[in-house]
Length: 498
Ligand SMILES: Nc1ncnc2c1ncn2[C@@H]1O[C@H](COP(=O)(O)OP(=O)(O)O)[C@@H](O)[C@H]1O
Ligand SMILES: O=P(O)(O)OC[C@H](O)CO
Image (tube, rainbow, N blue to C red; front, side, top):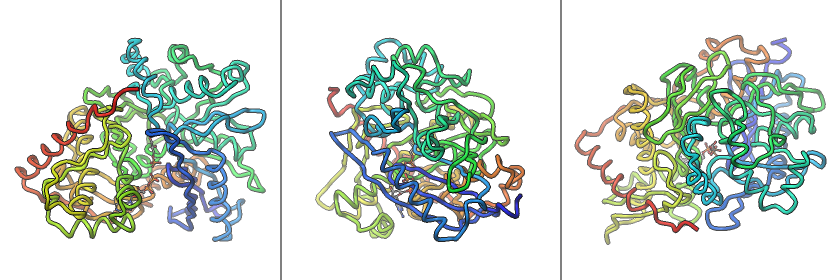
């Protein structure tokens, strides 16, 4: 079989773009295609995507990759799907049409509903059952909002006519032409409706949020055949994982204590904690991940909402740079930030602060501050937020990390990576292939279909590009970090709860 089907196709459905990447048996990228799609901001703090446009862009990239390479669908052993997590779409199962735009993970519209959950005394129940904190970030309150606000939705849901999905579920539904309604454990664990102890949808939370169970997909392992995609011939969909868990797998963090940090739109640091769920005492989440055998492992996660997105903001809203990559040269024009700190709390602060009312703040400005200082402060902010996560993680796990594995688009920035090593006093290890999210999905699908036989074989496919060693004296490091912490206090609790 291997010689006839030497390829695996990863569909990476991200927050700002849909990508398809074709890998060969050595996990080399044969071809890649990418399409951006529209970000809708109907009100301050609200973010939506059109799921129909997402499907169109994803399908177009798939077609493009095959056309570019001349690879035929029958040569593909399997499809792996990885996706922006939590983003919620609800559709009618008869027409296949979404009832509303998808509500994106970044969207803050359900913050008041989360306040209600807190006053109902559900904080501890949510934490124990789902590993999460009541925050607008997760899918549960987004589903509830759709049922309460889209005319007729509640009645249709009660009648069993509606289906819910995160983007993995939506893509599988489309690829199988409405035959399969499924998700995997990692995506389910981000909904705030899934019990990560029993590995089942949680009846108490469904009741508390008034969400009919008939909306929910079947939950399966991340490494399994879910159904056949119709690409002219049938190709098995054989791997699904939320993008951060896929990156953890793609970075070969199958075992307890291994950590990766992804610098994409947001920053997401995950530590595999093996078969044991670790409950954080420092504002991190417990979530599901994928173990070496493709089965369920637990992870600690720190989620930062604004990572590379702050660089896009410098580019698109402030016009300080022409391209994201220009941020590096711009930051290197100056030796420091001249006392400037930027806290990019544009959609509140995620871990470890969980403050939906925090807002972006630029502090420490003096007459000498220029655009180079601000750009440098933005890059440093990405690393400071990651240090917040790493400190919390090391305290929760009771260990000191020797090395941080990094990936994602902004990990290409050498200035950022060096500053990350300096400010965390850790080695930072960057792989040759930064697309570890897609790689993780490809690995899962390749394992499920027998393209690769085990994780030892996967390890042969991954190579290090560069390591960054810490090079900042400890006094300077801690003084600078204290400056960041002070700046964070200025950003917190800024917006008025509505
Ligand atoms: N060289 C760079 N320096 C800093 N940021 C970068 C660089 N290249 C890309 N980025 C940022 O990384 C993000 C894109 O990374 P990517 O992993 O593709 O994100 P996502 O999967 O979340 O869409 C963008 O926010 C972009 O601004
Ligand atoms: O699409 P990304 O890479 O920004 O990832 C989004 C995360 O999955 C949100 O939890």
